Length: 447
Ligand code: ATP
Ligand code: MG
Image 1 (spheres, rainbow, N blue to C red):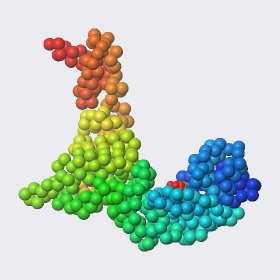
Image 2 (image 1 turned 90 degrees about the vertical axis):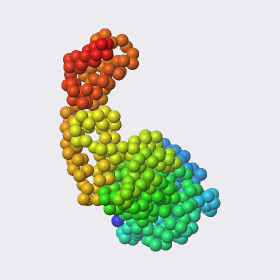
Image 3 (image 1 turned 135 degrees about the vertical axis):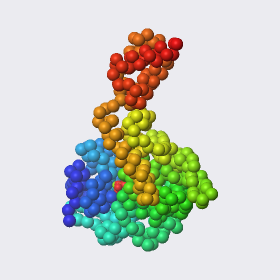
Image 4 (image 1 turned 45 degrees about the horizontal axis):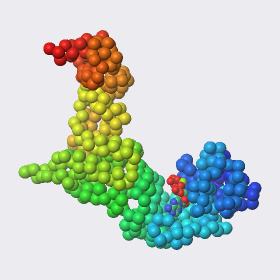
């Protein structure tokens, strides 16, 4: 077997060999290479101690990223490569970090501190694959298995629980039974982990191809970091538009929406307000009036807690707020939405609506028909570069001032009115037509 190691990484490995040290690529890059995927980053593990690493790579740009834990990042041909000395982790008293680490001369010791068998393989050209824990076989069988005793490993560092689910969601793995059991019994320890680390693992989980299956299988673990989902589970809708409870509906929608963080978060939480707004009419049909705004509050709370950036949070919340709005396959209405939301968010709204509809009762697919009618109109508006924002308007403030309008807030007001007329198709977006209309509006005002 031969892994395709990028040249900048090979350069570093050769340096270690020439200086008489052992060195291999290790962890995620070996796992991903064996799967035929492109590794996100390449990590090296070596017998050289941190000061020796610094000496051997003296002419590289080095960043002392985690020197205390034996990690140095070298920039090789512009590529950051993490180099960590073989180490054994000491005791863990806070469920997240070793109290101390000690260095070792044995690669096998270093591999034994790693979280899962699939992440505990090293590779070098001289020695081929070092796989002390059956990682390659687990990978072939799509199995997630802790290195060593699962309870101890999750007690040491509870983030591993979420990393484990992330690997399941991204790579389609199934945890073997002791690992699965232990992830569930230890999920409360996730409370000890920094929220931003949870947030960044969770979004990777959520964007995995197998996210719906993982969320369905492990709702209590997910509920530990995102309690906002828990009331949805098993909440029956008693409504002919729905054939699933709120949570199953959500998972079906998640299954068909693209793997974009904003889309996935918005669809995950779009109906989270339903359990709080449920009413039943005389016929026993369930309704959820105003659930959108309760879902927005819950999403805001959840995303702030998990330290998502402001832009993501704002986009997710505004999409949830309007996820149920009636869509109109009408050019003026579409231009108005484009003007308010911009193309990116409007397209996101359509994706949410499509996923939401696909996860409802197939007998009520009229909403999809409406979407299909809307899309060609949208594409035409964009292809023709029709005007839906002030910057597309054929006149600007200066033109209005030339017309005799005094500089001030009135100028902006009038421009907005003109844009509105163009969006509604009441006038062409042409300078003469717009100036004529501007004069008319001003005359009417002064009358
Ligand atoms: P990716 O790079 O795709 O996120 P990865 O497995 O490479 O996945 P990294 O955070 O880059 O994740 O970590 C590199 C390696 O370090 C892992 O493959 C694993 O061997 C080890 N590792 C990372 N985090 C932990 C942890 N919390 N506990 C034990 N070992 C870990
Ligand atoms: Mg990695």
